[in-house]
Length: 420
Ligand code: PMP
Image (cartoon, rainbow, N blue to C red; front, side):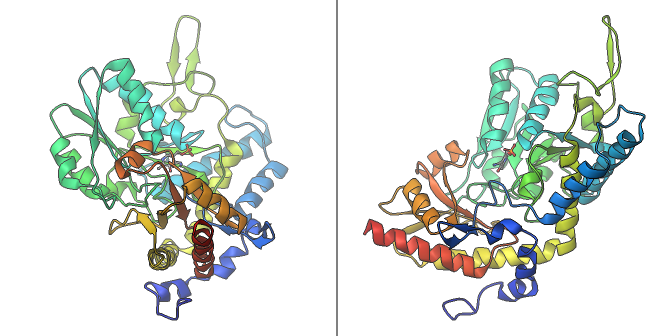
């Protein structure tokens, strides 16, 4: 039952998932903010970390931490084993064909830049076209613009409708003999729209065009199988899927990675170095110059263990219930506009309140213990498309509850009172 006494869509699923038990794994959720229990609705920016992730990192740091790949001593070997096991763990989670298709970077942003600067610079020339969508995060816009400056490529933008839904047929019309890459988000960070990536990949591949998916906002909400999807590149940010910051993942099909030159030079990515000539390792090490994020890789493996143990379907159903309830509660508030009402959405609700700037709304919500994100969400072109300077974004993770949705709705009503 909802707080309004009505049965909730997805309610049974919400009950099936023991959210209170999961919350115990996140000590930070016990915090008070301004004397009120914290309601954390900013997981799309970065999710909180369960004890299990911190424990795995601490355990490694306390028992066998050393730099990887270069030592013959015991700790270095153990550390290397754990680091490479983390790669295997990520490969298994994504159902990659081989472990070596997983490249560890320092973040999702870096992973997209790697593809742009290595694959892009080697395969694109002036006049070649890259298609992105109107939903993109700046991380999947600016690297292509930098390449445009450097090479003279053309950036085309697949449009959305007013609900924030991806217009597949319009996208298809953009595919041309000059299209060399489609680089789109799997799920919009600002609106929650789920892009029909299966159809996008089918259409692109039918014309021999590779596809990069920005999976940052998809991975926390659904199981991604890169072989079933067929994406050439898939990028995600571990810190949004209950793992640590400081690490990113680039999945690349083996044949794609093999056709990519190195992009950063340094230790670990070389086969041999002399002042006359240097040769390079095969992927993924070719793209991992310098000391990698070692503890973070182990934390990421623990995060994937954690999510898998809870069950992706159970988490997804729980979040669908939260999204449905939040949409119902917020859309019942007069003067509140939800931005992003596409039929297929992840658990993100972006909105504005008539007469109140998003930043003021965020500040008032914060004073009531409700943490949301306000602004353009690193998606300025999308804000322009929607005709708003900013939105208030509530994003839900596995640890959020229906009661927290009620707290959000109550806090929004308070804003309305204040803004009369
Ligand atoms: N893409 C999307 C869709 C995102 O939401 C984010 C993070 N907000 C990024 C890319 C960039 O991730 P990071 O800042 O962790 O590199």
